[in-house]
Amino acid sequence: TKIIGLCASVKMYVKFWIVVDNPDKENVDHVKTIATKMNEKLPDSNYFVNVIHYGDNRGASYARNTGYNYSTADWVLFLDDDIIPDPSIIDAYAGSIQRYPNAKVMVGLSELPRAFNTWTEILQTSNVMYFYGIANHRIHPPWGVTANLMVKGSRHNQPVQFKALYPKTGGGEDIDFVFQMKEYYKAAAKTEGVVVGVKGAKVQHPWWNKGKCCYKQINGWANGDSMCLLEWPEKTFFVAPNWVECIVFLSLAHVLFLEQPLCVSPLLKSLIAISTFDHVTKTIGFLTSASRSCPRSHFLRQIIVAFGGSTVISAQEITRVYCALKRLCFKSLCRRMDWFDGQAKMEVFDFQLRSVLYFLVYSLIVYCYYS
Image 1 (cartoon, rainbow, N blue to C red):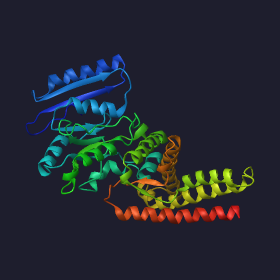
Image 2: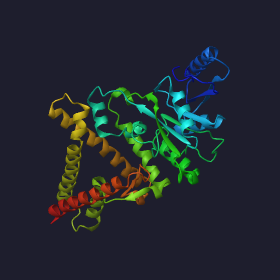
Image 3: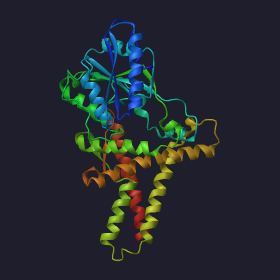
Image 4: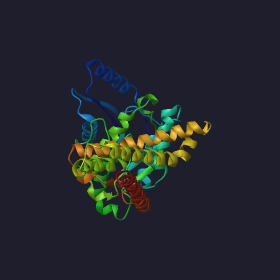
């Protein structure tokens, strides 16, 4: 009701589309009842709540396309059902339209609550939620999450749709959609910002799984991200193999080329050493972030949180390699997505340089155990 109760301070036409994916009858009736009551309370005929539902689970992309294509508005605002919007969010976006009349995508600010336990501190330390708050950091973000994203209506850019190839639970489809918009308006993108950050358009986003451990959610994002490598190869860059890829390549080489492949002692020692080195370096790198996430905690606990942050990143790396192997898409190995779409070239170079240095260390470890 907080979403469908939103109003603007100036006159405008606002239509709400609630898309209910895979509901049972009781829940559908409940949602329809809420919509009916809200339509009776809304200030005037410029506001109306619509409910769409279908019987099977067709996923996040299908649900968003449904609302997107049913609407005939000039602008469509995507909001997740679990967020709490700022009461002035419509005004914030309306003001941005006035300031940036040629923009096609408006990225709002999705804020998460303060970390309240070890897991939420780990997530905060790992910085996997960076793009939820990208509007705070960039006037023209490369993309934004669909928890709070406003785009030009489908009647202006009909070919641009959320793709069904991404996971039903979400992950990667928001990146792909914004990249499609930028490609569709490519001529405009060369002279002005197609994507604009609107930090005044705020929503409060809850912690996933109520703040409990949720590697499954993180791996789902990585699964979707891995599809972006195939859909947008021109927005990727080469790197030296990371620790997961080194383990895969080393295991394969051990089986194929070693005269005694059943002698697994050097292989196991190499795998353990490579994994240990990677997680130690990640943990050290996250210590500063961990001290900010839990500033009043003992240093030992900050180390634990920093190590937890390293496991979050490692879980994503493992998932991306697993998905590439599962799809037999070997060209995705040693490739990374440029999440900033050309806006952070020095960061990309730094990432590539570090990957080479790490690979040299991994090679030295293998040499020591196999020589």
